[in-house]
Image (cartoon, rainbow, N blue to C red):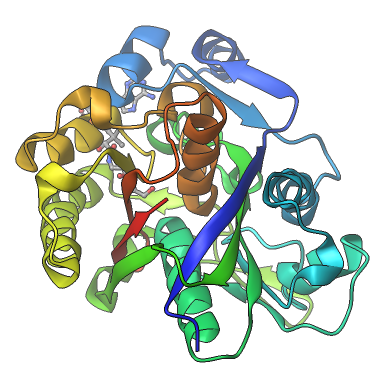
Length: 325
Ligand code: UT7
């Protein structure tokens, strides 16, 4: 059995259409809804997000991210023996976006499935892939976060539609004897289902209930700040490491204020936090692998660095993975 699992390549993809806060404010104004670049930047740190074109689905964004990750790992798609996609905006109710992605990658045979843990999805998926590899169920996995949240936004609700964007990030995770994933912590508390959800469903050939995202932002904010601190300490303790050992904190990119608060509680300098929320908005399960790939490709993250990945979101779910890159 392998001793560890290691990320051997990262990749990401953003749809071409970049929508600035000013663009969004202009569109919303035409519907009689008031917002401003100043409000969005001050409350969230978001300056722009990307929206996928009509007909472009999560699997399409995932495919582009996977191609970059495979190239970075020096692997071909047919060398992959496990595909996990974290998404809350799948192409179809079923089959899984992972199965659709597998076909688009031109391969067949290996297990492929989705993980649904909303904005914690990538941390969940990475943990599942790590466990499967360590127990001999696979040797090389593609672990992906891919979302088209623009499809589930209510553009009449300024409290949510300015926050989210589309994109995908992927990693190749391989069995290894070198240092890699050190520890992981996953949690959920279903008592908070209602504070962040898409309450609609499909039945009898129709959509029943509201198919658009609903969020009690303040409730999510309060819970997020608390659990992100707890889970960071728990995963560090599990690995026998300290906050001072962390080279890069890569939190879920929802709100710059939450990210800075997490770093401050851990006594990490703001420069140690990878921030992409300004340019990507909140891309849910895609936000962590997107941020990881950006910082790997711009040279900030180097081999051997210790990374703390933290997700939090609907469910309520939260989790963290500590790894030596
Ligand atoms: O991805 C999963 C994790 N998600 C999160 O972590 C999100 C957590 N929550 C948040 O990030 C913040 O709660 C928000 C960014 C969603 C909201 O920020 P806030 O500082 O909590 O604002 P608020 O909800 O308290 O609203 C303050 C004011 C309200 O007006 P009044 O009642 O004070 O007159 C809102 O109506 O801001 C108003 N407002 C806006 N104004 C202009 C809300 N949205 C907007 C907007 N533009 N887009």
